Length: 306
Length: 316
Image 1: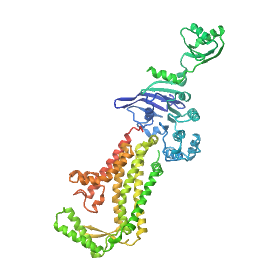
Image 2: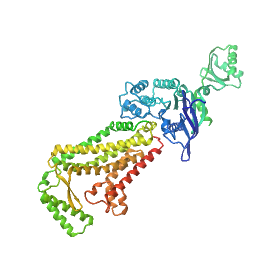
Image 3: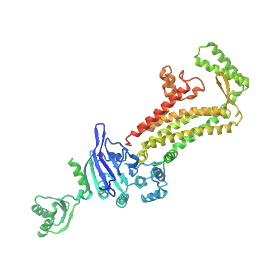
Image 4: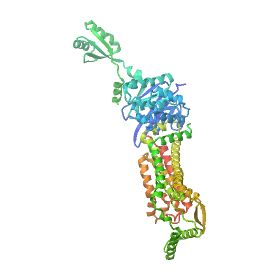
């Protein structure tokens, strides 16, 4: 048997008139995994999410959630899903608590009062839950949105831009929470975001979407560490001389001086000899460190290729 | 799957937690009180003086007009009927209902159902359109509940609210009437002309009949507004067009009266009181024809609402 799949998108397309918005998109999300869905604005992230939860119909293809089709077996399929689609819009004239009661009543499983207060505590709204949502800050609405999504303990959590409007502490909490539910409770989490650095910290696997196509899909580790060539930053005395020396020693490598450091790109096996050359020529090496290729650079690289 | 009762509870909570809803209920009650105060304190009771003389004068007028015989047969029939009723009153000493009695007041108050129609339109439009304008529709539709069931819970809630308004007007006008005018004349009966004879009917039945005939208009306009909101997702538009038609629809039928197809317009049938007072708005219509037309419109409205809601891509 293959690994159990929580979400399976099979060749999903969406056409509006002549325009193809989503083009033959296929992907899988597994239990215990945080899947990042990344792409520039207008690439079709939100459209894809709306098709997964059945808000928008598909022109072609299908989405299966635990093997149940969203198109033909909506109620069974969606029972496993909790989500926040775009902004966490709640009923402003109701209190936070009433909002949760409202959504709890729509759950097929009974959601107990204890469960509601447990979730409220979890998202850190215990002090304000009886207040009207109208008086909430964006961050609080974001937390309430998360609360309604996890109320019925779904096995798939779909979050569209979950950290929007949160302060750094809030972002860290949400991130920790997301990783926690995925890894501890084996929930599958599908996150879209334009905050690339965010995704890097949160996700296990990333799909990059552009113009409605999934153009790349990789594990977090592969995506940032796959390259053979390493970029190294060096801090040495006599910067100019060192630059000349390295330039002669490695004529094919990219070398440049940025502020008080030399940045050099080399294949892994040349790294010891680079160090050796400097030491042999009596340079003092204060620092030799690998520059992380950030997801952001990777992302720009990938999307610009097309 | 979530029970329908739970969905109704949700819709009721959302409806009644909105300030607008309570304002509508309050205005409704104030309107009844206001109508009571006006007939009690503002209108002078000089009409009560001599009802016999008035009816006799009216009869002479009818007889003269009938002699001239330049009216349609329906108008003539109507006058004959009125003559018979007036004569019955004079012979049996049964004065017409005075608006300063409980029943008289309730007959007047039955016209306040127009206000209920207005508020039903507002509630039926916004119960759906607000979910779209607030963006909450997304969270509502990603639950394991069929869209049709959600729409059904909304429609039922809007109509329950409407029914509540009608019952409120009825009960509150009974209360106001009995407090302001007491119970004298409570034993008066309503006279109807049936098959050439004058028949006495319990007045309570008559008042209840007026209210139920009027509630048909409330139901139809509420359903119309619900449909418009389901199709256009916009409550101001749904409210605007429904209220516009509520007030101009009957006039429109008047204007188009000469065309044969005027009797297929919804508004030729929304006022069913035309069959107990006076002649039908388009000649030759019968009560059962009107009921069939209303049923056809009702089914069309709901079908359109359901189809457009179920098929829609939600992008709000």
